[in-house]
Image (cartoon, rainbow, N blue to C red; front, side, top):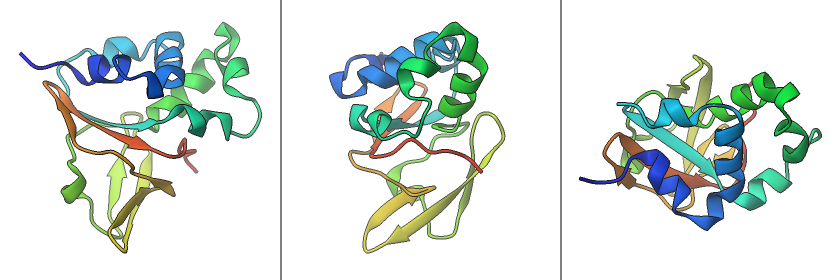
Length: 137
């Protein structure tokens, strides 16, 4: 049996900030579920580029809702492979927010975040690494 998307993210040290956030925001339980999910997984560097409050602040229990809202924007409630994204498309996150897809010169961006490594498939979805944390409007 293949790994879940949560196990894929947990196994990659480039996602240690995301993993901390998922633990603190109680989204781990969701991602261990049936899915399918698409995780737009920000690499650690993406979190260091966040405007204040920084991740350390967001990890505090008092900011649980804010953190959960932020990280929910990184998770789509469907399985989307890299090739499934098309220019001008809108995709919905697990908290119902819409994200804009831009495809230009072979690059796929979701709300401005560029997909780096892609199509790491698990039993309940797929993981794409991205270079920024998407902040929904």
